[in-house]
Image (cartoon, rainbow, N blue to C red; front, side, top):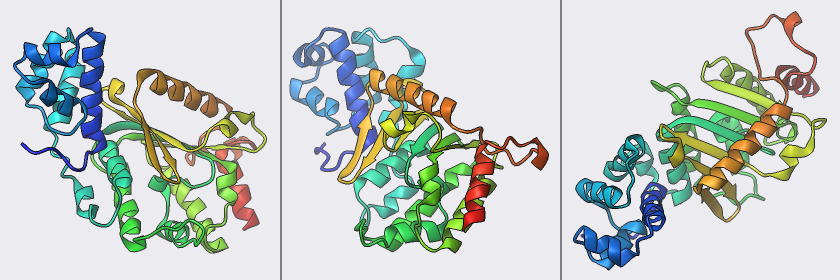
Length: 293
């Protein structure tokens, strides 16, 4: 079997997990490969994500590494056996690997926790708001129409069967950023309120007046699958996304999100009567910004 020329984040992550298990077991690549009848090179390619691993071989590796946690092992098997041929594959010729990796991660998520300081999160954006971002000359986006369709299609996870819970914390500055006309921004903020009606969506606004925790980090999304150990923190930057997968990194971002959420305003709750709303909650702040548009 030939080596992959393009490695998805899922494939890279499987290799990382197997390498980490081997190192925790105190085995060299040669020692581990010898025990299951492989060459050092074959195992090295598996750990680098350059080639697949048969389920039987994967189970053998877990056994010799002393890993007996069945939910974790079955999650590794599912990662290995996944085809990666989801809806996002049709965009391979038009978009780079980062959007495709994110869509695949989201497709397996049971929970997504995201923090955005300057933009409305992509899963919540209206088409006109997204178009305004993509056509901004300072941001240099290409393949605008394909990117726009891709982002709108990503949002289907919010209303699919068994959707993930999505908890978003949006800095107040993002409410004031003018991507498009006042009408575009107004429709976007109203869309946020409508999305908050979904039982699986929680939206909090982080106000300028809060403690500065949110100022200490940029945007990130913690994408959590059924096996939390295999979660990924995605940090988007100008030159590409970074994928944080080590346990101490996941723990750090989990704690960071909790601190930000604690200092953010109460979530949007459209079920309450107007008189029941606190003056300082997320809905009130959005309504105040709407009033100024």
